Length: 138
Image (cartoon, rainbow, N blue to C red; front, side, top):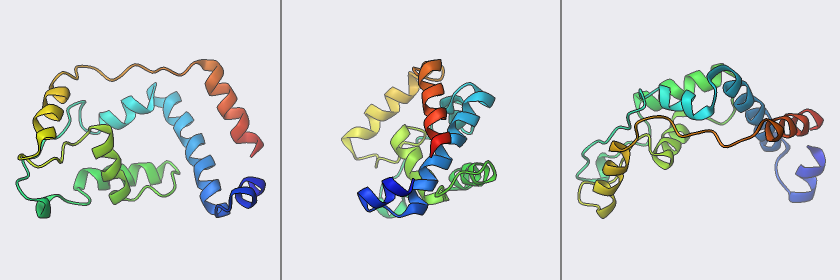
């Protein structure tokens, strides 16, 4: 970790956070089958689609992102505050915060409507073992 921090000029605590979070992801996978199942379980596999008409109304965090954040912190994740989690929820499609006047709002709503089951897991056991081994070495 120190060599990565020194070579790339990244704060050592950030590097440790990435390694720690990687280990937590593997633990989540063992418990839930995938991170996808874990995270989508918070929204019952149904994304939120609020009907925002003004950008001033879009929150930077929600009670749901606070709940997820608290659970992740309890599990040992780092740097997962409610604002970061809400941003992830937007990027991953758990919430569609596009304004109703945005051309992407309807498109994202239709994509979300087609989501019946969690996305399949694409990692292989070999990749997981390699990831775990690298994390242990760091």
